[in-house]
Structures are given as C-alpha cells and as structure tokens.
Length: 441
Image 1 (cartoon, rainbow, N blue to C red):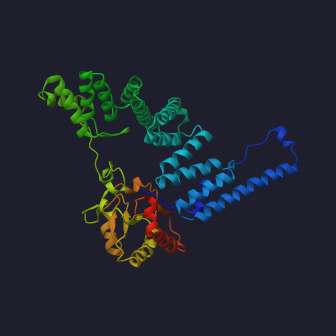
Image 2: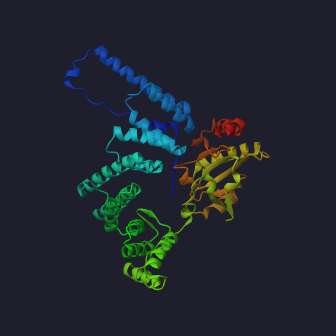
Image 3: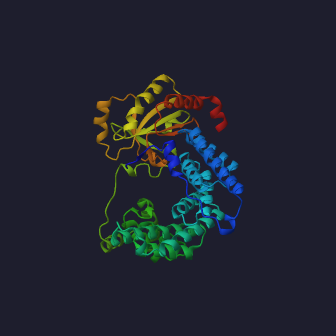
C-alpha cells in the first residue's frame, strides 16, 4: 500500500488551513471599527497560539494531543475548532486511544453533521464501547449516513467517474452500511430490524456477513430450514466482501449443528453445500500477506516475519521497550533516517530490556532482500504483516516506541534531521525508566 511521506508541521498547518470568515449581517456591519478590530485581534491571537501548539509538539503525536487539548481549553470558540477536532481524532487514533478519538469525532460531527466519514468512525468506536447508549448513538449515525447515501443522485458524481463505476461504488457503500446498521441492531436484540437491514444488504450485493447473521437470527427463532439456507450461503460465498470477512470454519460449525438437529446426522450436508455452490457459481479466493494477523486482538498477538520468512511472534517481547521504524524501499527519507536509527540501537546494545526493529511496509516484498543486500542495514528487519494498519501508519517514515506495558509512549511521523537523534534518545530513556512500568500497572 503506497503511503504519503510524513505529515510535517507544515502539512498539519496546511490541513488546518484558514477558512474565510462568514460575512457579517447588515446590522453587524454597523458595529464600531474598534469592536471589529478587537474581534480580528482575538482571531489572530488564536491562530498564532494554534501554530505555536503544533510547532512545539514537533513530530511527537502525544505532545500534539496535549497541546491541542490545552489550546481548546484556552480558545473554546476558535475559528478553526473543527480542524483542531479532526487533527485530534487522527492523532488519538494513532496513539491507540479510542476514548479520545471518539470524544473529538462526536464533537466534529456536531459541528459538521454532513461529515459521513467522521460518522462512520464514530460508529466503529461506539460499537467498541458496546454499551446500550453507545449502540443507540451508533445506530442513529448509521441511519443518517444511509439516508444521505440513498438521496445521492448520479448528477452529483465527479465528471471523471463513469456512471458504471459510480453505481458500483454506491452499491458497495450501501451494502456495507445496511450490514453495519444490522449488526448494531442485532447487538441491541432488535432482531426484526436487523433482519430487514441484512436482507437489504444481501439484495444489493450477496455477501457472507449478511447471510451468516440472517442464519443466526433464524436459528434463534428455531426456523431451522431458513438457518440452513443462510448458513449454506455464508459458507459458500467469498469470505471477504464489502461488509467484511467471515470465519468459514465457524460458519461450517453453525451449519453442521443446525443440520444435525434437523436430520440427526450430517448425511446429505455435502449435497446441500454443493447445490448452493452450483447455484452461486465458484467464488474467487483472495489471499496475500495483507491478510496476516487480521484477527490479532492486540500488539502481542501479532506474529511478524523476518525477511527470511521465519516467524517473529511479539508475545515474548512483553515487558520490553519496543522501538519500531516503519519504512519502505521507495521512501527516500526512510533511507536518510536509518543510519541514525541504527546508531541509537547500537548505543543500547546489550540492554536486554529494549529491542529495535525496522518494519517494512512494501506491497511487493520481493524488493526487500535485494534492497537490504545493497544497503547493508544493521537493525533487524521484519515485514509489517498488518501491524502498520493496526497502528494507523499512513505516512513514512514513522517511528513508534511502546513502553514495557505495551502502550505507545512516543510517536514521530516524518524525519527531522536536526532533532531526530535527540528526540528519539530522550523518548527511549523515558520509556526505560522503572517508574513508567509501575505507573502503567
């Protein structure tokens, strides 16, 4: 997956580019010049403090979050409040702080109720919380996004997109949205509403997720013929689809359980599956390195690969400070950063409480061995195998430090030659301090 180069201070400021202030009404225009000048000065001060908050954080995401939160306390009605919210959402996600990300995502939705992308993020975070109140809010957001998508007409599409491609994209989005709302309703035990949404999702584009959920609802209602039909579809359709991925082994177990309950054994089950398969046609199979660790629950359940293909489970690293440098062969700044990263690793050689890894994110892994043979890197190199996606790495280079409790204590997106060695060394030293581990406990 190709990534943009790191978000620098300039890039963050660009993302928070000033918007033209709205025109004042005729009555407001009659305000005195002194009053207008006062407002202008207040906005200018807010802008200056925002730039200072970002600049002071440098490439440290944790510091950026602290600075922007303090900025909002000082300027709660800042002209670019929405942009600050968006920056906080992104940074909190990168620091793997879902509560913080949800807080500012919902604040941003309140300011910009038409922001479907932020609503979808809020839905995901609310689902993770799982409380009844959270699920109700998530369902409300999902309904708002569905309504907006359903009202979109072809006239609104970009002229560069064909009508066929636009319709395909809309169908994929609608398929996923109805399934998403159905899953929320099912979590709330609103089975009738959930079934309608899953049926709508399946009718737009047949998918295994919707079929599996319909099978589970039918089984709960003791409608076993319906459950068998839906589970057969879920087992036969592609595992991956616009709504997500099913566990085919689990679907097979559910199908077998219902079949035995109806027929007393599994005789005839194979014929049922083949009949369903023939009716649907042979589904394509999608596999690749990007599917590794898809079910990993946390950092220490990941199993990465060394360049020679041997496994590197992260579970034995519990209790150690882990320093990760995400890179790719096409990334020029990554190659400039590496010697300094390697030197810092050498400075801590022999420290058994600390490990350094260069984590490769190339889509074409065949490029890596030849690259390393020429560059002769000293730091151990491993393939990301989904760890980059888990840590929301969207730009390169990105350097992350995980303390001995497995929490992100430092994150740097980009490479600043003047400050890199000092910043990373200081962050490593802080992560190694014994009180860091004790406070995490």
